[in-house]
Image (cartoon, rainbow, N blue to C red):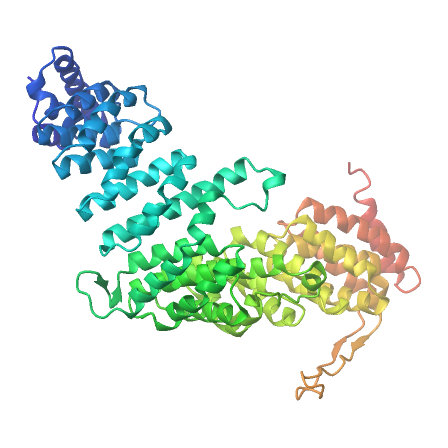
Length: 614
């Protein structure tokens, strides 16, 4: 005789090793198989319950699928309940034995016991195939008109599954959806909204999969029918906002936030790429955004969904600015989950705004497209930058992603400075990607050549060890293409950085040694640069005086010693030694007219010391 469920659970919990647990399960599975072969009906419901427990532990239970079918056909409710639960957990819609349940489901749907009908509706909502959906849809439809809201809401979820499997039946149920939207039960309302949402999502997926160029702009029958219900949905949402205290549905001071979120999700699907529907929902979206309580998570969830809807539909600029300001308030929240969601959503807003703008505007850094999300977001720039100091790495990474998208020609100096500051503190495994991002920003929005070269050199002094060869090559190319004055500045600065470095910043050494070899003669002269006075936004000179930059001339012997010291360090990479050898060969020619004989002899010795290298 097999064990009772509670005894099996006790034995499994008492196992100290995985091998002991497998032995217990194998023994019990064998006894269950024996009971199935011997048709022990009195233990059938117990055996299925134990199979459910084994399924939860991850063990195979396929041999008990037919037992579930037999329990479903039982006239007793306790056995029927175990049978339906087993069928929904142990079977999938691909199982061949599922078709055997169609007749039992049809009988149970016509049962006078509403709980039996509820079990059948739950099973249909979870497992119905296309063939089952066509066969059982008329019986499910009867329950959409049932007197009990318990059956109506379950019927909505069941018919949702049927319509997803058989989209051609949608038109037959549109009138029923209109009636259900007037239901007084919130449980029925939320299920009918979910029904519409699932049908639209399924319809969109089918259109993407079987897209026809001739019918690209043609709306599907389901979408056309549901678009007519936008006024009813906005009225329902407005009623929820204006309703007084309702203890049955209120959560955290918000009336039925689950239903509000579902309605907003449905409105987002209906308003996407539809100006008429978007115009009809603009007022209620504005009301949701301005009147929802934000002290509790229920209100924040509604506001987040409202923001997503505003950004997805064809809303006006003022509403989009309001949505961005809501996300800006989220960034000040103490809850890291809310801040993460805000940063993630703001990143998508900026990306969408850039994608919608013209290529020419994007190249100039003007992302003030028709949605104007990017321009509104610039007001929250300081708050976003502060997120880089958050101890949570996920917050810092999302803020970094957002700042990268926020950079334009007007703020490139400030935001690049923030990126470089974060580069000092960020984990080493993220520095390579950071350097690549800074390079892209510099290449796209650099105000002048000097600032570009200066920024790249600063980045190499911070993360030269982690930066990719592309960053090193780009720095060399920009220095090589610049004027002689800028080359002198870059070479002087690189020489100073090499002297201050401990030999670990490989990228800095590669670029620095190459520049010293290529432009070493420029180091023999004094260098002074007087920046142009900066101009304020109104055209008047700024208050701060520009600081002049000066470098003293360096003796040829000191230049050679600096490069030689780099190669003598134990940690010096082979690629740096290779470039140093090339540098010595170049300097022996460039210093021929300036250096003392002793320095030139030293250069020749350094080159000859490696003449046998391969």
